[in-house]
Image 1 (cartoon, one colour):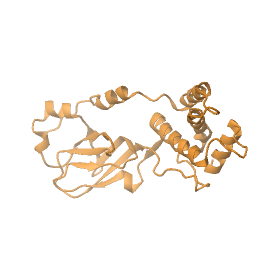
Image 2 (cartoon, helix red, strand yellow; image 1 turned 135 degrees about the vertical axis):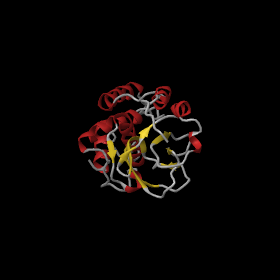
Image 3 (tube, rainbow, N blue to C red; image 1 turned 45 degrees about the horizontal axis):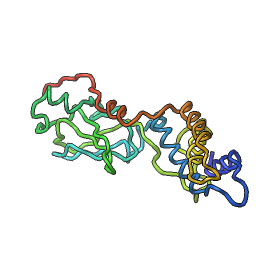
Image 4 (spheres, one colour; image 1 turned 30 degrees about the vertical axis):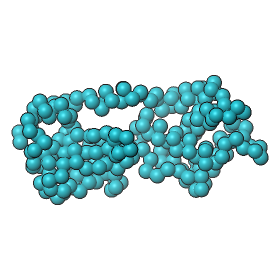
Amino acid sequence: MRVQEFIQRFRETVDDTVKKQFWTDEEVVFHLNEAVQEACERAKLLEDRTTPAVCSITLEPGKSTYLLHPSVLEIKRLTLRGRPLHETSVEELDCTHPAWEARQGVPRQFLLEQANGRGMPQLRLVPTPVEAEAIALTVVRGALKPLSADDCRGQPEIHERFHTRLLDWVYHRAYLKQDSEVFNPDKAAVSLALFERSFGARPDANVQRKQRDRRPPVVRFRW
């Protein structure tokens, strides 16, 4: 579905087709962009191993930490010289490799440091690389570019079979608008339930933190 089709379907469903419309096109598309991101985070719909800006990083000697593309939600696989690197944690490194932060050599492990505030997620390599070479990533990500009400032919990046289900999120957010003529928490709740049936529930912040902090399997190396 294209942006214009989303807007038209939305207005027909909520009966917002009269001359005085309660929601602008920009509001509808704003909620549509939210829907795409929510779907990607909940159902991990976009896996990418080919987009250069997202899936390739050139290492610098003596530099251990690298910014990831802001769309990255999860690293599924990371390879250097065709060999996979293993994900680890600060706690595991502290237990098994004292002074790991000072070690240099060919990276064998990595840590994913989640974004804080307005920062971007970061990748930390262990040991710190000593050569300039490229690493390849396979990631789960969100959309690369938001949709715009000015581009009526734009389409969500996720597969078309999910497009109509995105509208449930748009209805959910639209019915929460603080306007006495359209505010309807009951309809908003029904629409959210339909969206969650399609894409799953969003874990709360505490659950997400525990998932990030979950210790990976122990992988021991001789450095």
